[in-house]
Image (cartoon, rainbow, N blue to C red):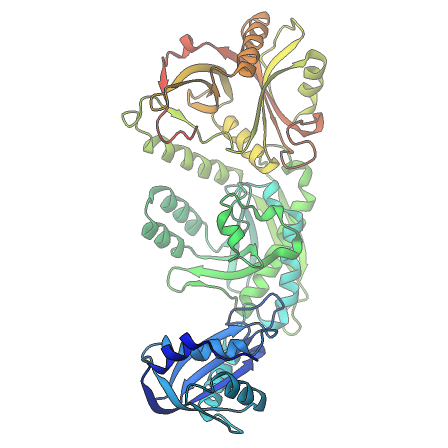
Length: 545
């Protein structure tokens, strides 16, 4: 065992030595684990140093159980030099501990600091502190009522494994009529299709859902967004990562929970109310209602998969008898009505489009060109598919826009956009909501800062909105050759072309989608830059080239 080095000893001896007696100890935190930082093994210990004379905590550390006695010394030195407020730097006259091994270890390390180190069987101040901690832990509201915790967690993992966000966007609202537990109808909104946040929001009123959506679309500050969030009236199930504070996640802005194994996913339950704020736990009746609602939603999605897997949101009504996880006065089953709300879904999506149009001001930029349609990480390709493959796609894809093309040449020139299935569904739905695809165009652009020229790929929807889908350096020989073939093929079929949207970006067919991966084929016009009349576009700083 080595002692303190001479430099450290001199520094500590320069501290004022006070007549206080300090208590020190190292204790397991198994009874307090819900409220304190955990190690990877799920257990931890606390090192605490207390000034018994002043009655203040000078330092406290939560450590792994396998850390050696050196951790006790580190905490003590910090208690001397950098104590927690209101303590001031000082060196005690005496230290008392209740562990003989700790006593002997400290005597060996601190022998030059003129501090008496004694053994006592009890540490009254630290004992009292831990009794208080245990009382707080014992009275802390659990996230879920114990009798329903296993059922709800099991149901949450069923929802995660089924991945309803691959079927539903957050505006595809499903009503779940309970008429029990002070709940009439819950309105379920599934989060996760955009690969950002995953979960199910169960709004207790349609008014709350609509007000929240309207508020979010009109707020542009953190404070306003927080106010809108806390104004919701809903129960929720959300999903997070087991160790959500890891440095790797902070460095990866594109982190997606869906890429993790189920063992790394942890469900969270809670409620939001305008008068209560957000609370990360459910009371007993709320837990029952959430369990029954999630079970009904899960059954509904399984039974309606074939109808929902296509790129629409039809009228579907189902009725289920769900077992109630409770003995006593309540009946053994509850009758639950579940239904899609396609009109509401259209209204919510239209609300977003109107807000975007209102926020858009052509005077702010040189041209009304948006870049929020095609996912940033999508795979893009200019190419051609043979006519026999086109024929198969026309009858096999979920979404097809026909232009009654006359076949000529070797095949149809196409733009391929491959992304994940949820993002592909959103992309397709946005084009459909805009009335379909009006045309595809390549328009010249330049970066005035770098002095480089670009060939800008643009999609125009039937409502005349222009979307940027790609920025190709005009000096790139590969793109030059692809553009020449594109123009020749479009000319052969009288100025027409196609847009293919495929899934499977993160799978084995990433970058090379197979026929089963293709979700949409839009036949459309190949527009010239002259037809659009945009002229030379200057790329502004917000276009990240």
